[in-house]
Amino acid sequence: QVQLQESGGGLVQAGGSLRLSCANSLSLFNINAMGWYRQVPGKQRELVATITSGGRTTYADSVKGRFTISREKNTVYLQMNSLKFEDTAVYYCMLSWGTRDYWGQGTQVTVSS
Image 1 (cartoon, rainbow, N blue to C red):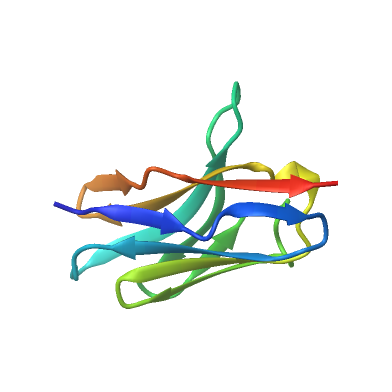
Image 2: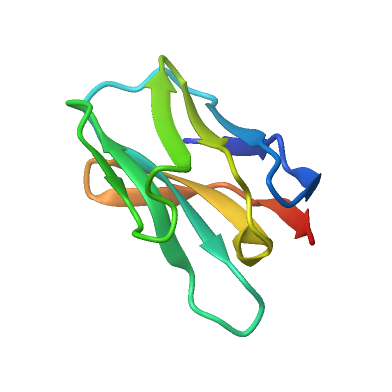
């Protein structure tokens, strides 16, 4: 089955940058989309960015101009620049394949101010 593992999270000062990676254990065909979501305790998980198999990208308004999503083979990346305290959350990788969604275990991003 699909196994997703995120990496690259950590503690960073406001204004700094981080690059998240999500490695897919399998080489899959006909992937619908991959993306990044984030969640703060007590709040709903929210979309950060997605990228379709055709390369179309979508971003939350709050991260437009600061975050960039990309995909290369079995790995999806999220480049995060100009980080704000409000970006602090657990970030989850998502892969949509067929009719199913697959999720990673999450990586913590903490932005100090």
